[in-house]
Structures are given as structure tokens and as C-alpha cells.
Length: 468
Image (tube, rainbow, N blue to C red; front, top):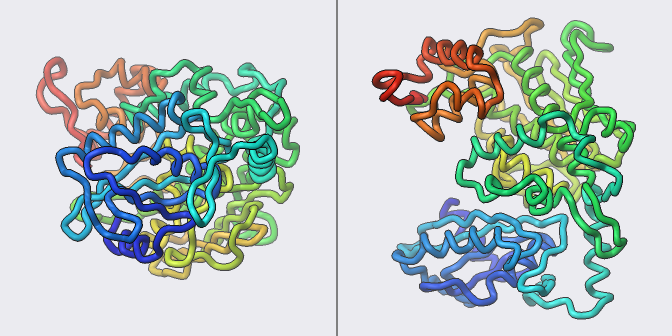
């Protein structure tokens, strides 16, 4: 969070999506009324340590860490906020004062705090008290987000084998202290919004989100017959294709297949960010692919496509537009089309905070391709165009990974496991990433040869060091 961003937010003043609150050494009593209202309306930004008249009061430095922890704990506590919605406040320095910044996304669910439902207007938060007001907000959410659709006959047995366990392990690898890690599967489904009760229709069950994230291909196809993602290479044969991957798997597995398609056909290049070697290709295309999967309007039959040409990559997906025109880092407000899908992707590390993807692609495109002529066009069909320079022209065969970069998902998972626990054993790694010990040992040896990891000390008493 930059000072320029904070300054811009403060200059706008309080309104539909911005709220200031004093918080010298304790949380404001009405903080969760605003959080609840933002979740129920259009999302927003909260700055603690600022009065209504924009005066910068700041927060006690000795209390600020504790206050951030309280916000995280309370947002994940269904007794305080139901359904719970984990928030991650950030400490920012502004004009020699400490502030807390809270970004609250719009939610596809209706939230209550202390048993009351709040909505938001330009004048502030207000409680919904009548039956008509409450029914209207449930109706609004149901109509706005197709991911909310409930399928009462959808069961856990309709999910791909092991996919829920794998997803939860990815959350644990990515965020070892995540409060979801200690929940049962049933609790996880409820708290993440994948299983819900609709108080407007009376229906209860797994949602379309759950089917899309975890479902077997035949189950998803039964619910959405037009569901698929077409990945194509059109270099020599422009009319048809040189290579094709027709993907009908759930979103977790679709992400992996699309990233593998990118690794197969697009080369990477040596790039240092400071002293660390990073993969520009992965930085760019993980955002493009995550955006395709997270923000697609799934009840629209328009096919999603990811096409690699000689000089560009074009991605298209059906969209429910909230803005019409070209998006740039300076002219758009982040708006999740499928908040529950976005939240799961964020927790497993496949995407970051809402709005960072476009900025990241702009940041890394020029060093990758030599061009900044990127296009994010939001219409009823969302179109992304990423230029490719001569050095980044596609290839028709798998490319070798650059030196010092993980070359497959298994090696990336091993590195993550070591970053979370430098004393982790071979057997523990094998259990976390769901591979046999022999596979783990072979990939660790490869990572050693590439200089990505080191073993410090003996096998019994030493530890792992991740060089990058």
C-alpha cells in the first residue's frame, strides 16, 4: 500500500466505498457494521486512524499489531460476522503516523454482524429491519452472482477424487497459520460459502462455485453443458491450430493444465529482480489464467479461449461487465465477478489481492516482451491481449526451464513446503504434496543441481535453505 494510494483515498473523502474511523488504541465499536455493509453492498476501503474530517490521528504503535490481529480473528469468527469472511488488515505509515488499511471486497453472500444485517449508502451504514428489506438484499445477491446457485442434489461424491484434500493442503502450504486449516470439511464448506442456505428461496446445498472448483468433468458438464476452456497454438496453421488442449476439468485442475500449456509453448527468459531470479512468464500468465477462470460468467455459453499466436496471446471469456472499455492500472476499480471462487484462488496462492493482477502484468510485460501494448478490454466478452517479442516467440515443442527456476509444479510445491518449514523431512514433504518419497527425492536432487535449494548440515540435524 503506497503513500500515493493512501493520499488518493483520503482526498476522495468518505462515501459509498470509503470509510474513516478513529482508532487510537482500540477498535471502533461500529467497525464491523461498516465491514458487514461493504460486504453486502459494493465493497470498500476502511482507514483506521483518521477522523471523519480527514484529520490524521494515527494509531498507538504499541497497540497496532494487536488491533490487526483482532480484526483478522473477529472477521473469521461466525459469532461476530456470519458468514465469516477472513480479512487481512495492513499497517501503513503516512505522515509520520501509523494507520490500518482494510480492503473489504464485495461478497456474493449476505452477511450479518451481531445478528444484524447492514447495507451501505453514500450517507453511511444502515441496518435492514423489515422483511422486505432483508428479502430484497438476498434477491439482489442471488440475481447478481450466478456462482450462488444452489444444487440441493450435489454431493461430495460428485467431486473429483482427492481434490478437496489437495486444495486444503495448498492452503496450508501457502498459509500455514490460516484459520481454515483446523476446520472439518463440513465447516470449511460452510465458512467459505461453498455450501449455503438461501433464505429467499429456502434451498440448501452445495453451490455452483463448489461444482466448478471441485466437480468431476461429467458433473460439471451436466450442470453447465457448454463448460470448457479451449487452449490453442496458431502459428503455422492460423485457421485451425498447431496444438490444442480442450479442458473440461474443474477450476483447480484447469489452472494446472493451462499453466502446463503455457510452459510447453512459451519460453522463459533470464531475469533478475534485485538479486532474485524470477520467471516473468509465470508472473504474467498465472494472472491471465487466474483472471479467466475467476471472473468468467459461467452461465453464458460463450466459450473461453486461450490462443497463442506468433506475436501475441489472446484470452477471451464471457463477462458480466461493470465497466465498458479498456482497463489500465490507473482507470479501474477492482470488482470480483465470482467472489467465492476468487477467495479460494487467493487462499491457495493462484491469485493475489483483487486488482493486483492487471498491475503485475503491466509491470512485467515490457521486460518479458519488450512491449507495453497490453490490452484488457471489458465488454460482455472480456478480452486480454499480451504482446510477444521476438525473443518470446512461441515454440512448437516443450522448452527447457531456465537455469535456477523450478521446472514443474512438484518442484514448486517442494520449495513452498521448505519455505514454510526449513526442518521438513522427505516423508513430510511427500505427504503434503501427495507424491511418493522417490519422486520427492528425485526432484529435490534436481533443485539442488539448479542451485535453488541447499541442505545445511547433516540429513538428521540440518535444515533446508531456499536460495531464491
